[in-house]
Image 1 (spheres, helix red, strand yellow):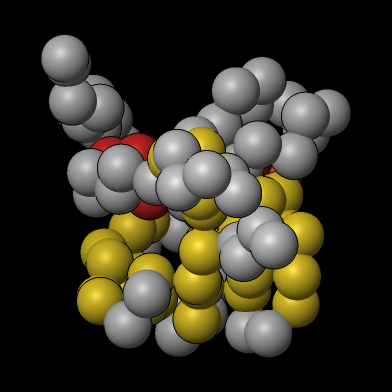
Image 2 (spheres, rainbow, N blue to C red):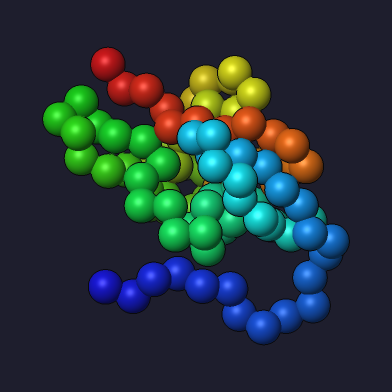
Length: 94
């Protein structure tokens, strides 16, 4: 399996946020989905049976990339810009 990685490009300033309590480094202007993929996150959430969920459409229609951001549920990571200090957790599916 090929791991996602950032391409060489001019970037905005560096930012840090947490995912499941772990610090993630990102760049201003990146979406939360791209930052999490580049950081090697293997599952944005889990299905009811424990299978990992990752971005599918990357344009905001499917909700497969939904995460919890600063306590808000069902935030689409592919449509959300990274902000310094945001707290991101897996979306809990029950």
